[in-house]
Every structure is written in structure tokens, then in C-alpha cells.
Image (tube, rainbow, N blue to C red; front, side, top):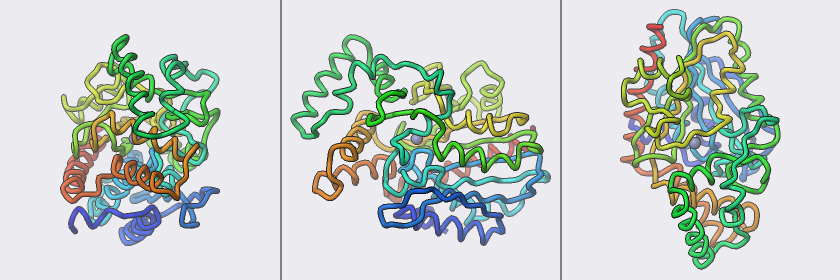
Length: 360
Ligand SMILES: [Zn+2]
């Protein structure tokens, strides 16, 4: 099939495609219903497909839609692997677990966040020990303004520039994106406790806790880096055994979040922590496969605008439609060339991950 044929225009279409492809591949499918509904009134669920024996000691886990709107890409990748027969011949004692739309609400509503306005990659921590983010606190009313227009945004950009002059561009990115735990109507909010998605991930992985000896984890993302390029980010910081395995499997192109080699700043509370918690006796080798879309500043602005729209604006308005189409493009450039780059890289990364896992 062509690369484009694996991608979907809506969450509902992606879900149906995934379930059909998983069924055709002979997978076992478990579904976890989310209590919310999509904009079309449709059901929302995380679907988990397993190929290979449940008792396998080697487990490859690939997850889509941690950041809802990024699910257009992640679902397309999962469907391409299934549809193009990547798992037809599995190595012995190996199982594949494809977690489709861990944040089905954000996928369906084309938002990065979940039904509680929570960024899932800031939610997987002990909330009693949630970090402070003074830069966010200082800039809050500019990051999340009450009104949205070209004029108000020009004023916000002047405030941001002053912050950059006093600190640096990367510190501004960190202030906005590293997460915060007090502003429930703000951006990159980590919540006050485990979300539905966090509990669902734990439930989906628990059947494997007793038998999986080594698990590879690929969390599929978009939004950072050059257009169409898939960056392999180690989920463990440099200097740890997990990061050493990522280096071993992927070579020098693997990046670390804590040494400046990655397009991402070091965030706390990501999904990898949930995988480790659910599989406490298993060695986890985790990466984030992050595909570039647009430059970081328009990406951040698209998230800020979408937050403004859902807190202060009207979805059913010209500005509302403009903001929704902007955030969709920011996390899913719906273009043939981009999709071809995504799939080619996904096949490459899957092959190297399987090789690393099999040789472990
Ligand atoms: Zn993401």
C-alpha cells in the first residue's frame, strides 16, 4: 500500500482502520472505553492489539496519541506496520503490543491535551513532588492571554523577547513547555493526579508484568524538529543504562534530553515512567520517535491559541475554525511527502528496535 493509504482524516476513521488491520493480522484486541465523547458524539476508546504470545519474555510496545492530535501520525504508523505485514514473522518468544490512541479525547477533538486539559507527558509523576516552574508563573498571563488577536499577540511577543534578552530562547521554551501543576486552564498542565490515560496504560500493561523480561517502548510524537525528520530521543537521560542501550541500538543519531542534543527540553512526568511502573521487573529500553512539522515558535503558538479557544473562544466561529485548522496542521501536516518520510523512517526504526530487542 502507499504511505498515504495508512493515514486517516478523523479519530473515528483511524480507530476503525486500526481495528480492521489488527483483526486482519490476527491480533488479540482489548478496548478501554473513555467516559467522554468525540465532537461527532462518537465513542472514544484506547484499543490495544497484541501479536505473539502473551507470555513472551520480549515485548515491543508502540503507542500513539499521547498528545492527542499527534495521533494522526502515530496511528498511520501503527496501521502501516500492520497493513504492510511487518509482524508476519515474529522472532521466537517475542510479542508486539500496539496501543492505539492512549489519549482518544485529544485525538478526536484535535487537541494536544486530554479531557482534563492535561498534557499526558507531564502527568506520570508523584504529584506531591511536582516541580515548580518559575518562568511559567512569571509569564502566565502572556502565555495564556484572555484575548486573541494580531495586536494582542504582537504585545505578547514583546514580553517574550524581553524574557529571551534576560535569559535565552531555550529558557523561554522551557518556561512555556516544561510543565506546570497549578494552572488548570493553562498550557502544558500536568494535572493533580493520575489521568484516565495513565490508569489505562497501567491496566493495558499489567498482564505482561510477570513474564516480560525486556520491553522496548516507542512513543510516537510530532511537533519538534525539521519537517518530516524522525528524531530518536532516549527516554532515559544520558549516563544511565537505559540511555546506553538506546545508543547501542541506534548509534550516535540517538539524542538525549539532558545534554542539548535533542530538540526537546528535559520534561518531567512522561509516559515512559508509566511503562516502568507497570512493568517493575522488566528492563525497559524507551525512545520517543518525534517527527518534525513546523518550527518551534509557531508550534507553541498553535498550542497557546488552541488553549485560548477552548477556555475563552468559540469553536463555531471563523477564528475558532482557523485555530483548529492551524493546530491540526501543526501536529499533522496532511501532505504526501511528509507521510512518505514518516513511514520510511518508522519502518527503519521498527527494524532496528526489533533487532536490538531480539539480541538482548
Ligand atoms: Zn508529543
